[in-house]
Picture 1 (cartoon, rainbow, N blue to C red):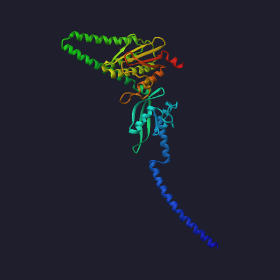
Picture 2 (picture 1 turned 180 degrees about the vertical axis):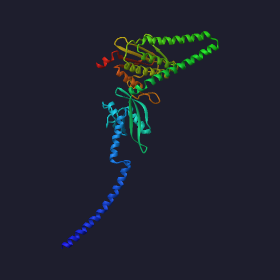
Picture 3 (picture 1 turned 90 degrees about the horizontal axis):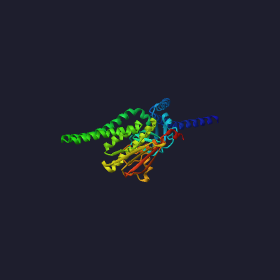
Picture 4 (picture 1 turned 60 degrees about the horizontal axis):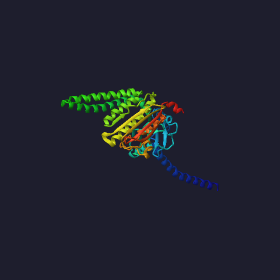
Length: 376
């Protein structure tokens, strides 16, 4: 009968509604739980607020004049700000690409293992030297990524030129003060013992030596920056108790552009420092370094020799690798990498041989007409 059919349909509908209430109730409970969980994860923000915060973050990062890069724990670049994209437009670093620079990989491993930042680290990428800060991204005390802040050395130099000059002047004054204090004590002792002739001889020889060095550099080196660098290294050698001798027949009358002078000072400064340290390490106060230079012909040539332990033939290429060092402590292993980089900018070369003093001899060669050489 129609009435029976209608009753059965009503019963079926009621059962369906009753059965549907169970998954609907469960779904509502789960929806509330998921919604609360999601709200907690997104800090209670609405979608519009999240969108605005993302845009605000992008604008903030792009406004920072330092290159800012984020890296995950798999050492892949996850984001870069506008400045970073400008600096690394040649794809040395790009989003989605894995870090392949050995020195940078080493710094990242240190940050991941120590969960502490690394600051003011030097990094050589391509032909450019950078200053790098690394800060870990922590989540419940676990490193989830790293933020790199990168500045070019040229940018920093523009802000710190004056400070660097003051610091160099201070170092030279400290070295001279240390040296003169020893000689002053000697003179005082001689005067106390009434050895007036010997005291006068020491004073005369000291004045004559200083005048001879300054006169020689002023007459033999036309570039004031290079002359100042050599004078500073002479003062530093006295503090280290290493004999630094400049060949009296050396001559450098070529005029260099300011940027080329800066690169050359970086080259000879690092090589002389390494030579003095090597000579002092092996021979203590009998260390000896000899410097000679000439600009005869079409090239400028510097020879820097020492009586240190020398460099084995198998190590001649390795020592220029960024991060390689035999010294203890931080911020080592970059000096000779800077030398190689600066010589590349000067279109120059460096050769290593055995010195007649018993140690290493570095021969630095680069053309006088650097611009024409680069164009060629």
